[in-house]
Image (cartoon, rainbow, N blue to C red; front, side, top):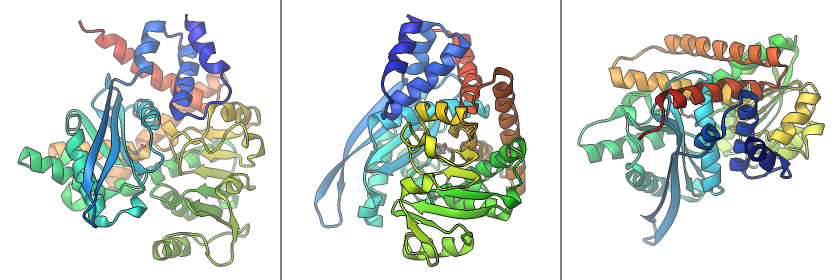
Length: 427
Ligand code: GLU
């Protein structure tokens, strides 16, 4: 039965569906851990899935109905944690995959949360600020069946930000009749946000990339990097690694990328993108598509946008030495095998981008205690957690001669499996 479960999943041609990919990644780790069939079934299925269809009155007086999800994957190690994304391509299977990845991510860095994710099918660019606020408040009300400081704590993800979190916190609090700061993380500082949370995902990517460079004998001052995505993760990690002396040669956003092998000035890029709303058209750089960008020569490649970017089609053409996954799910298992065979050092998403949820954990702890830390303290604790996680994963990879993703999964799935077994089955 176990082998059948494995081969059914692995025999399929390269899956494009994120949930299939997530289950395939889980199965690889489950095989290494020798998990029994019952436990596999428990860990593979999301615990709770909520679909909501809700109306929003638009600025022109018309009514639009939006579809959203909140999915909790596994709660054995603590309350559910994970972001909310607004994107036209959100689907239930994407949210299932993202929720599962959050379970493993929290376990990789060993913070006491289970995994969850939320999403609304919407192109936020097409909505006014007032419409976005109404959508957010109604979606919050619909998912308040699940969320709460002890149960499920959302955070920002693709196309959501501290303002979105403020509306969620305010809406949830309005229903309760008192302020509940700890219901979301990634909030603005003036309503219980944590110093350093906004930069935390990018900072975490910086920390692990530094360690990866050490293991690969790569001098960051002589290294070049390519970054896909210039949102909260891509823009911050670009800036931080440039401060470490890395030369940024190409970067992109949803509209496409720009390339200059001599280097791009990240401060000018930040300024240009905030004024123009895009990087495209940035002076003294060539236009590249998001796909071409991935195949540019560089030392460090940071996919920091969406899932399924590096796959069986392009993995042989990737020219980076290190890939640091700022995004969730940018590389599929087929590409993982190719990259490993080619000696490319991949720092998997559940490790590389775990800085965000780690500082979310700090924010939640501070909100619950009503006692706040400064940024120095936050960054020092983040460094401690990311360092330990990187070393633990790297050790398993070395010992078992595996890629880092499989090593991270062995650690994370192992921890969740233990917790699930210890708690037992009720009744
Ligand atoms: N959306 C982020 C992630 O994918 C952060 C989640 C959180 O802070 O809860 O890790």
